[in-house]
Image 1 (cartoon, one colour):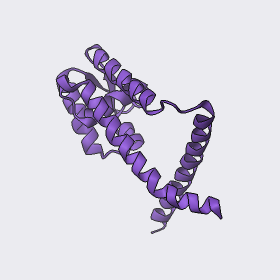
Image 2 (image 1 turned 90 degrees about the vertical axis):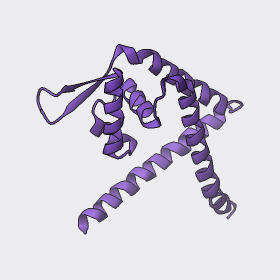
Image 3 (image 1 turned 60 degrees about the horizontal axis):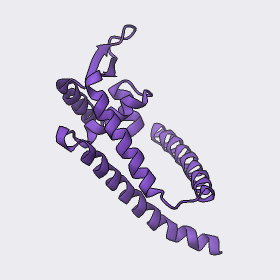
Image 4 (image 1 turned 30 degrees about the vertical axis):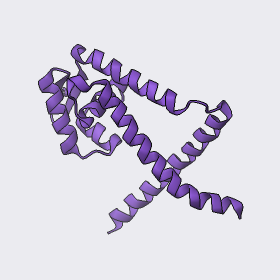
Length: 159
């Protein structure tokens, strides 16, 4: 019974903490490159490209959950600034590949360092045992989210 009570209170706290973390990490990233004048969407596109997992606006949109129009606008601005290069895919001309330019390297490094510093401060005082429990909990939540999204997709296709 005690466990159920803790979970009910956790819902509100988890939502509030997640929103605060999201808002404050975004502020830290914007502050790290303030003089460059990047928008939040431009910052996120740069960070996704730096990871090397996504190299199209469509991929970034799907993985990040951002509307394609916002990703496209950010990409257009980054191309204009010379931070990103676009190239049509050789196999499928409809696909446009994105590549970070060397001019973006210093900005990306500052963003990555700012994010690393932010999370180091955020996790200050967290023990290894607490981190292990947290990661196990997050892994379960991600699995639950994946299952829920698959269920929702099935429901929307049935309509």
